[in-house]
Every structure is written in structure tokens, then in C-alpha cells.
Amino acid sequence: MSAATGQRQFPVLMRVFHWLTAAMVLTMLGIGLAMVASLADYHRLVSIHRPLGILILIVVVIRFINRRFSTLPPFPATMSPQERSVASASELLLYALLVVQPLVGWGMLSAARYPIMLYGSLHLFPILPHSVMLYAVLRTAHTVLAYLLFLTFLAHFGAVLFHTWVVRDGTFSRMAPWRVRAH
Amino acid sequence: MALYLSCFLRESKLADTRYLGRLAGTGIVVLGVAGVFLYLGGWFNTETLTPARFADGFERADGIHSGFRLNHAKGVCVSGSFESNGRGTRLSKAVVFQAGRIPIIGRFSLAGGDPYIADEPEMVRGLGLLFKLPDGEEWRTAMINTPVFAVSTPQAFYDRLVASQPDPRTGKPDPRKMAGFLASHPETVRAAKIIRSHPASSGFDNSTYYGLNAFWFVDGSGTSTPVRWSVVPEQPFAAADTAVAQGDRNYLFDALIASIHQHPLQWRLIVTIGQPNDPTNDATLPWPDAREQLEAGTLTLDRVESEATGRCRDINFDPLILPEGMAPSDDPLLSARSAVYSQSFTRRAGEQKLPSAVTPSEVRK
Image (cartoon, rainbow over all chains, first blue to last red; front, side, top):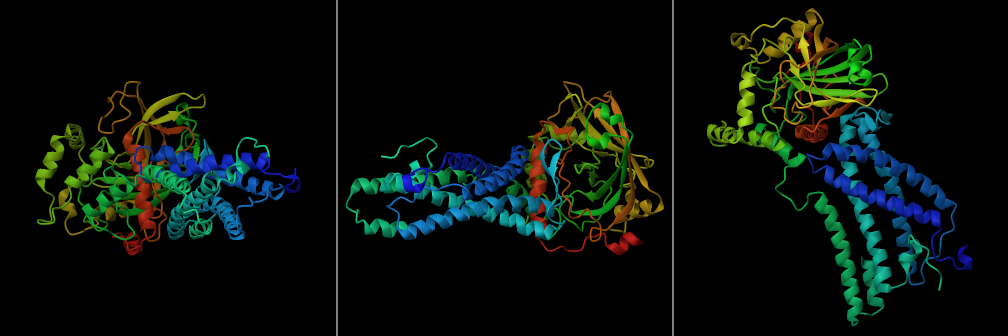
């Protein structure tokens, strides 16, 4: 199905990737916020945080490749050219953050000379030399990027909610997990 | 936001109350979602003890010392190796217990947040170790020279820290505050009695260091055993002599440096095997003396360096960096130690590094 024949929804695989990423990233934001404020659950949460971050990196890379080979539905007619460019830019920003944030996490653990344990004895190799100053910069960057990711998610969520609920142009159905038939 | 506002004005739906209601609803939902996440991050809770508040407590008690650890601030770097005899594989599949030699980075330290404090014999001594396993895993442990810990929970640790904080008027801790703490913490009083029954040795080199918290060792078949560990010195015990301390602020460290220059220092790694009913969640409680002990190998430390040139300063001896085959117990101190050590590491990483009390020239002497 292509845009020309009235495609309204993203292809199935793109929607699967979208909701998979959404679930993982929202879990990750919750874990990240909770673990830095927790004594009792810190270790348990960090132990999930590290492998989940790497999983997100892998999924986002595959997702981005899949996107390149997929046919996207057109923007709703209700969106102005400005809104379309903002939507495209925010999509690009989300992709960039989802790739950069795990890399910064991996890099900062490398610079701190922590073993980067994933599961059991499975661990990652360091990608940066041991330098606590580098660690300090990347650790701050990890927090800043996390809040930027959080704000970008809120903007994305708010924009879809606005279009679907206030403008009522069926924006949500484009990415709905279920099949939505064209009118 | 400006874009939506312009779109909203363009469509001139200001008069449509249902439209306005939905618009307000959108805002409320978005704020609600943001609120749930910030709630998870403890943004609306100013009471609960967090790693950051814990670190602030250390800074209030001992002052801010740029580039130093919040606790065990005064220290010196050592290195050497661990020779495993293979006997530990009975309890744990961790690579560290397979027979063979493993490189070690270590750090001797004194408890407290002041990196320039004058050495005294009864100060708590620490030994942090990093075992670098051949498969890339690591085992890190931070031990002290008392057989049990003074507190059993993170909150009690913090409350004791606050109680021992110097009073701004007198510059000394208020004895009434510590008495108040002890009155509500009988476990600390009991632990102090046990600690006093183990008199301090003369130096770092002939001290026993205890891992304190219980852990689980997991063998190849998946069987878990509760354990505690310690390193017992080959250097003969001599009682601490308070007279030696006079005049040399670094006398404990200087004695260690002299001792290590003379000959390599050795400790036996002793694993104490717990029984099913032994407490694993309370570091103030000793296990019965009759518990089986397994000697897993010998630790040799043959090199000493100042923090300025050694590799230990920029290492976090987080007790929860464990290889496969070791797991944390239900001791609440463990996760809290990991969190607060990490907080301390992150704070000092970004700070300017001031010279340590034990200088490179002192180590060369």
C-alpha cells in the first residue's frame, strides 16, 4: 500500500517498533528518575537500566533502518507546513536522543572504569579511556539529555493528544497499534 | 507551544467552550504525565533519604574537600596480585576462585571525610580491593578493620552521622545527640562492645579487614550459599601503641609504606560459610565463631603509591561490583552503599583534585 492509494496508517512493522520503543523508553525514564533518588532499590534499578539502555540502542538502530525502507502515510491535511516541519524535526530529535543517550551512558561508564555488566558475566567493552573528568562531563550530559528526552516525549505526546482530541483529525490512528480502516 | 497558540487563534474557536475544555484537558493530561514521572524521581518528597541527601550529610559533617571521597577520604594506593588456590570454586563459580593469579588494585584508608586528618590508632581503617578477572569481569570490595558494622540500616548510618556532626557553637560533636542516638539504637551499642573486644593492631599491615555485609556465593549448579569474607594478615599482630603516633600526622600510612618497601605484604582471603538461619540482613550481628571457614587464596600487595600517581583514586570501590557467581544479600546497607559511593564518585570526579595528605615524595622515602 502506498500513500497514493490512500494509506492512512504507518506500516505494521513501523507501528510495532514505535510501541516497543515507547514502552522501553518510558520504562527507562521512570527507572532513571527513580534510581538516582533511591537507596533501597538503587542496585536493582541500575541492573535493569544498563542492559535496557543497550537494548534501546539496538532497537532504535534497526528501527531507523526499517524506516528508510518503509512507506510513510501523508501528514493529516489539518497540519500546516510549519507544523509539519516541527513534527519532522521533533521526530529526528527523538531518534538522535535515543541513539546518543545510550552511547553517552556506555561512554560515561567506560570513562569511570566501571565494568559494563549486562547479564550474568556478559559485559561490554569500554569505548572511552579511564578519565574521571570525562566521566563528570558525560554524567552531567546523561542527565541533561534525559530531561531533554523527557520534554521531547511530552511535546510529542501533547501534540498527538491535541490533534486527536482537540482538532479531531485522527492523528493517533496513523500510529494506532490496531488496524484503522480508511473512511 | 507558540505554534499551537497561533493555530488555535487562527481557527478562532475561543468562543467554543467544548473546544476550550478539550484544550485544557490536553494540558492537564500532559502535566499529569509529567507529574507521575517527577513523582517517581522524588521531586515532591523532601523527607526521604536519597543518595544526594546522604552525600550532603557527609559534607555537613566533615566539610567539602574538593576532589576527595566523602568518606574514607584519606588514603594511599597499593597494587599486587591475588593467588587463588581453587578451593573457592566449591562455593562459587566466580572466575576469581579458579586457581591462578589475578592483578589487584587496592587502597588503604582511614574513615571520615577529612582527607588531612592526623592518624590515630583507634580510627577505623579501610581496605578497598579491585580484582581484575581475566574475562573482563571485576570483583570490588571495600572492607574495614572492625568485625561487625556499627549500624544495620542506611537511615541509622545517616542519623549517627548527624549525631556526630560538630556543633557550630562549640566545634565539637554534642555528646547528648550521640547519647540520644545510642539510646534508640541498641544494636549499635551491642556492635560497639564486639568491636572493642577486638583491639586494634599497630598498623595497616597487620590488620584484619572484614567485608561486613553478607553475600551469596553461587556455584556451577546454581546452589547459593550465604557467606561473609575477610582478609587475615600474615604479618604478626602487635597491639596499637598510642605513643608512636606523636609528631607524625601520617604515622599509620608512613609505617605501611616502610613495611611494603621492606617486603611484600600478604593476607589470606577467608570465606566464612553461613548456615541457613544466620542473619544476612544485619551487619551489626556476627555469625557464630564455629562457622566453617574456607581459605580461598592469598592476597599480596607489593607496591605502594600516592593517590596522585596511583590508580586507586579514580576508582569507586563499589561493593556491588560483583562477578557472576556472587550476588548481594538482603542487607539494606549494600544497595545504599552502592548508591552513595556512586554519588560520592560523581561529585569528586568533576571537582578539582587537591593533593592528598600522603604525597608522592612521602611514598618514595
